[in-house]
Image 1 (cartoon, rainbow, N blue to C red):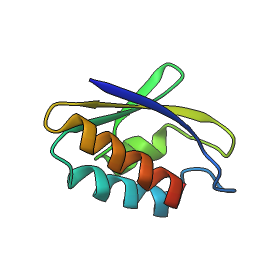
Image 2 (cartoon, rainbow, N blue to C red):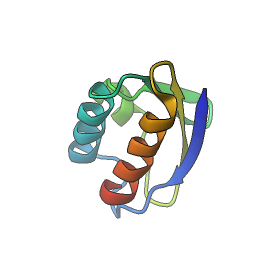
Image 3 (cartoon, rainbow, N blue to C red):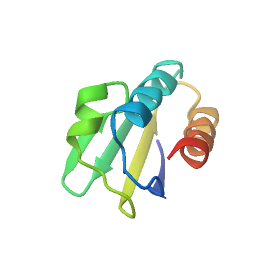
Length: 85
């Protein structure tokens, strides 16, 4: 299991477009990716669940990557966050 945190810099937070891109990126990985904000968690592949977390700009979320190639999947998710959120 690999984990990392990321603070959202997008001025609108995680809205429909970045949530959709995140779900698509997570589906392409060989690992299971879960996003946690406070007490709530969502599978990164589930667009509506990710949007349901209500992540706003400046908030920090935790990514948990399990199974498959965790190292490569974690690196891919971190890169995705830096480029898109």
